[in-house]
Amino acid sequence: MIHLALHLAIPYALAYGIFDRTVATRIFLILVATMLVDIDHLLADPIYDPGRCSIGFHPLHSYIPIGCYGLLTLISATRYIGLGLLIHMALDLGDCVSMGLLPWSG
Image 1: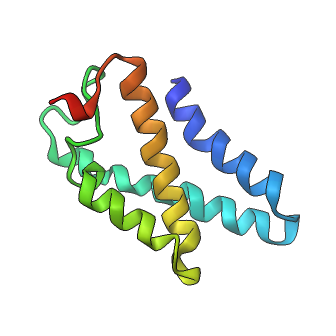
Image 2: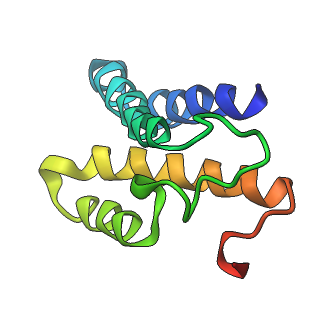
Image 3: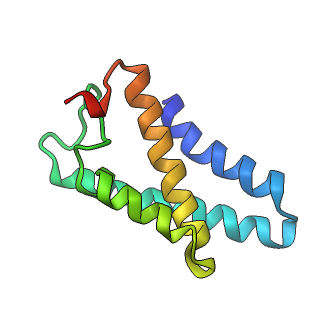
């Protein structure tokens, strides 16, 4: 449950902590909308497995897409989308590490 709360709290803190209110709401909504990347969980069986690490397992949580998310941050028009996706992946990685599941250890 804390993991899901962080997916809202971190974008909120980032948007409202760095930007003025005229753009903070827009940036917060963009960052939260990147949670739609979890749609790839619907391809898994079971859809939700609390003992599974998302990084490296789900297609949109694999290494090549994550690299592409980093590239999105270099383009001004997609910067916040890329940032939101990288935040999402970092939070998912943190969840994996907290469970003792290291995605790069096979």
